[in-house]
Image (tube, rainbow, N blue to C red):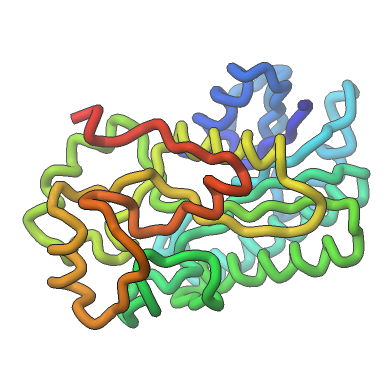
Length: 280
């Protein structure tokens, strides 16, 4: 496919661009910063004119077949709440709306695990968490992610041929991050905020490619995480210490992720390949 990739210079975006190109896709990065060249266009996503111009083919080549939207302030606490909202919500509206206006009918974008109730100061309703319970945003950053999912829901209602897939990514990691993981075992609370989850950026790219290839028209949301936790300590011990009153659904392996990825496995064919345990 010919793919427009927003946020192409970010932690996840850099890996996604590399992996999609390695799979044979023609990827054009759209970001505020990047390396000048045929695979990059500098775009301020908060400016609708720039976004629609970029998606309409500012480089005057073939039209885009899909958009992967990763461009955003990537977490709470980086900018003020108001600045985060005023960057992220308009950017996503601009990308979605420009895609629709220019005839692009396949969008995959970064939602977030935060909609599940992170940092779980109020315990989750059950473990493993999944996509079945209502969103529980606990920050302005997360509120935007919920609003983006609602925007996508309405856009596909208006345009039945439109496919939008929200990938609720866990905490994105690259191999250089894994040296710190063994230190987490000393304090179960240090990573309880996302049920001890993470996602290797390479598996994040795999999930995006699978969604680009198989997601049908309509809107759907998927938790995307690694197959395991960040901890060497067993799940039963962690849950008993930190979430003793939370119901556990089904059988939980010793180190299996507590961010349920069964839906992504089943409907997208997502199959995480990378674990920190093989890197440290």
